[in-house]
Length: 267
Ligand SMILES: NC(=O)c1ccc[n+]([C@@H]2O[C@H](COP(=O)([O-])OP(=O)(O)OC[C@H]3O[C@@H](n4cnc5c(N)ncnc54)[C@H](OP(=O)(O)O)[C@@H]3O)[C@@H](O)[C@H]2O)c1
Image 1 (tube, helix red, strand yellow):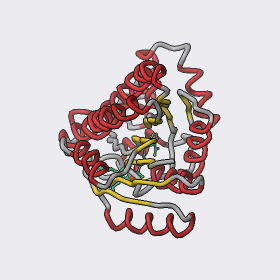
Image 2 (image 1 turned 60 degrees about the vertical axis):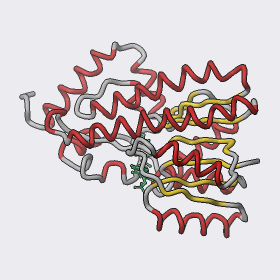
Image 3 (image 1 turned 135 degrees about the vertical axis):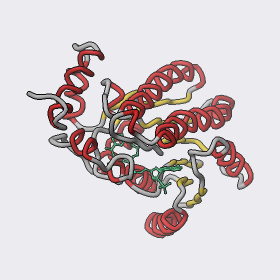
């Protein structure tokens, strides 16, 4: 077994996935911006599980970051057999009031860098006729989500892109999976762009999972070579419900509920 590369491995779901794959003796390449956290996690995982670990510090909001990660793997002679595109950011609020740079970073990190990394590593997997790519979606990829509009659109992109390349890759024995968590207790809703009144209204009363639970479902789906998996039984039920309603109706119901919660319209 060669290396499993995980982006966004310094915290939350990515860190939990790193622990899960380390326990299955995967050699790991961990990618994020926080060097100290990556260093510490590599040390912890190699001493607990006796595996090789490497880290690459990269800011995926930069256009060149994906190429630099790929080149660094080549330079260190690390063959990537499993690529887990997990890094992702979001925002919550009324679109014109949100910080434009953050909205554009969402597209760069969640869509553009994910596409570039997939392209670069998939070329080698296709030639070798083996490999796995796992792209992290979200429950939001199945609904239209006012007040998280760019984030929701980014995850719809990931869904369609991943479903499509999954079919293209079948003749080459490359396994591609779209894995979607629902609300998970991590730093995701604690950033400057998400930790606000809109964020709280969007997540209140929602069922949550821990990163460990999500990572264990992802790892099981990887073993079973699933093409598609939604984490958590409650989240799977929500997605079943969305199959009977048009996206615009879901958007209308969702937005009216949030507008009432935020006092923008009367009940
Ligand atoms: N938490 C949820 O409720 C939830 C629900 C559905 C889907 N998801 C998806 O699950 C994935 C992981 O989210 P999470 O909940 O684990 O969030 P998290 O705890 O905030 O972790 C995000 C990870 O991405 C990395 N990251 C952020 N910006 C980056 C950048 N510019 N360059 C490189 N790495 C960057 C962070 O590391 P550094 O800060 O060190 O760079 C961190 O390791 C995301 O794709 C998210 O969309 C999350």
